[in-house]
Length: 79
Image (cartoon, rainbow, N blue to C red):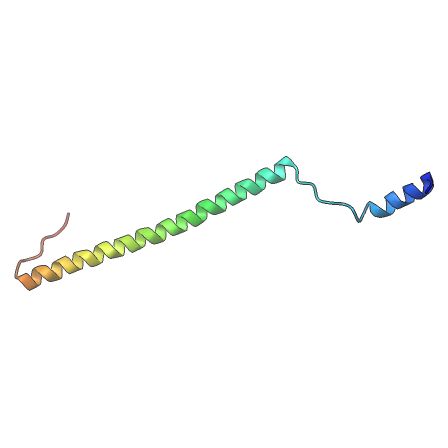
């Protein structure tokens, strides 16, 4: 293969062997995106758990009121 053939081959393969470059800015941006998605997922899960705890607390208060009424003791209000 002579110099001319090598140049033609390089020219033909230039479009085929083009691989994307992962420079520092793309890696940094990917890290930030993954970080923000993780925060959003954690926020959603945290809000869901807080809602479940509030519901359980409300049910517990209702059960205390029901048992107080069964015992003939007036329920107390929680402040």
